[in-house]
Image (cartoon, rainbow, N blue to C red):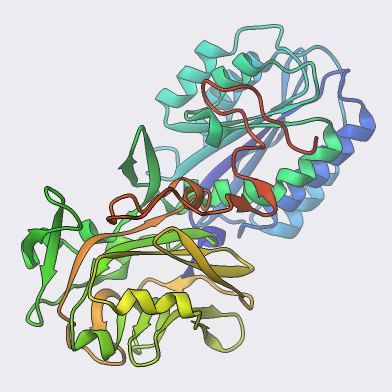
Length: 435
C-alpha cells in the first residue's frame, strides 16, 4: 500500500461555533470548508475517522467519530448539519469532545493521531484554558481558528497547542477560511505522518533526522565538520547506510516538506553520479531521492508520479557547480504538491514544476550515499541530513554552519503568503490572513 497523509490513521474532530454571531450563511461556508478538508483523507476505520461537534450554549454531537466509513457518506452527513444559534461556550464544547467523542473511538487506546480543530468567531462565555489542558493530557492536538474582530488572541493561544505560530490561525471573516484551507490540510498531514521532533534553535520541528534513523553513529567514523567543534561523519565505501523505510518513515511523507543536508565530498566523487538520499520500492525503483551528478554539474530530484510511477526534475543552474568544489555546502530542497525548489548555501538557484504525486511504498528501503543505480557506497562526509515536515522551515533554516555564508536569501514564501504572516506568532503582534 502507498502510504501518505491521506491513508495515515487519524482521529479528527471539528468543533464548530454555531452561536448567533455566526449566522446561517456563514455556517454554510464552514460546512463547505470541513467537507473540502475531509476530502483530503481516506475515510474508514483503518484510516481517518471524522467527528463533528456544533456548539453554542451546549455542544451537540452532529457526527460521531468513526460513524461513516466512506468519503461520500461523510460528506452528505456534513452537508445536512443544521445551524443552531445561541451563546458561545467553547470550553464546554472542548471538554465534551474529550469525554464524549474522542473517548468513544475504539482506537482511543492505540497510538493513533488525535486532532481537534476548534473554530470560533467570538470570546467564549466560559473558561477554555483548563479544558484545553485536559485535552492535551489525553494527547489530543488542538488547532484554534479565530474569525473576525471579536476573537481574542490570548484565548486562541490558550486553546491551541504550542507554538502558536503553528496551531493558531486567524482570518478577517468567514470567506477568509478558504485561504487557509491548503495550509490546514498540510498541518493535519504533518500531525498524522510526522510524530518525531527535531530540536532546532528555540523550538522543536516535526520531521525526520535521517542520520539518526540510519544509526550512523554506529556505522560511520566521526570527523571535524564545517567548522572547528562541529561534528560530522565520514562515510567510507565499506559502510552500508540502509534501513527499512517503514522504520524511518512509518506513515510515509507529507505532501510538502524541506530536505536539508550539509555535506562535503572529494575527487573522484565530484565527477560521479550518486544518490545522496533515496527511498526505494521493493523492485529497486526510486520513489523519492536527491541525486548529485558531478559529470554534468546538476542536481536531480526524484519523486513518485500519479501515472508513470516516477518523475525526475533536473536542476542545471550554473550556481550548482559550487557543490562540486570539495568544500562544505548545504543543499536544501523545498518540495510542495506543485513544485520543487533547490537552494545551495541559502541561495535559491532554481524552481521547477511537479506533476501530481502519490504516496510512497514503505515496504522498501531508505539509503544514503549510494552510486546511482548501484548498491555500492560513495565515500563522503555528512554533517546534517534531515526532512522537516513544515515547508515554512525553509524560511527559518539557515546555512550559517557553512563558512562565509550570510543570512538566508529565502524569499520566505509559501503559497504566495509571507511566512511571517497568517498566524499569531508567540510574543509578537497578531498577524492576519487576507488583509
